Image (cartoon, rainbow, N blue to C red; front, top):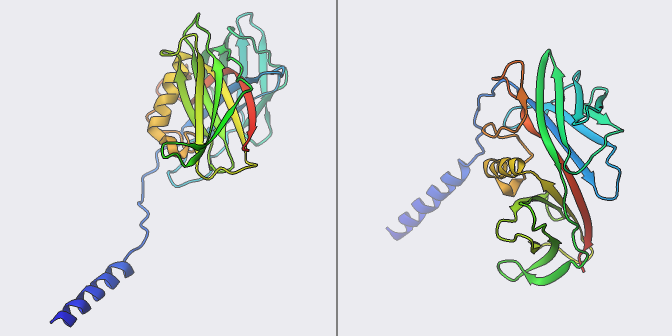
Length: 273
């Protein structure tokens, strides 16, 4: 009886293993919607003249590519009515401006005309403090004390409410690591940020970017991270429930995804010791 029982168990396990397979769920794909990536980044130490805006559309859940959009007219205007035109690199959906003039505190208006529809947004260019040079490394960091951890700091401006976006790219991550942060509990203090990974090793180069962002973008980005899953990066797909600040003035219900943002950016590279 014991041998028969063993035989039945083995056969049952074999049957279950042999029936295991990957099932792709046939998801219904909604009609494509326009995505406007209008992120104006003014890296410290540069003029900020070279800027790009990218147009694409949403696509199916399993797709790894996003169709580009050509044929749009794109301009950004400042408060003095200076106009900065973005011209498409033919067939790429990438629109380039070579004479943009970023100014901290200046308000800019975006206008995108595509297929007789007009999309607009307004935003202020937000400054950012310098990342301090004294980046620290702890080889026994992380929650379990078994990760290489770096810490960098920056001085918050105590005279105003500030919001920051952190982007860290390392060779051990498939996607950059993002975090949105405010200064509510650190007003006017030296703020600090950590990044750690157990797979980091000596010689690995880590790229750190600190962006100044508006309160509106801070709220938007936190929703974006929550909707898409912070572990996989927020830009692999645009979650249908998260809308930015871009409005379709022609047909309000035919909105575009994406956000019009203008940020000063500080960049630091660190090599793991």
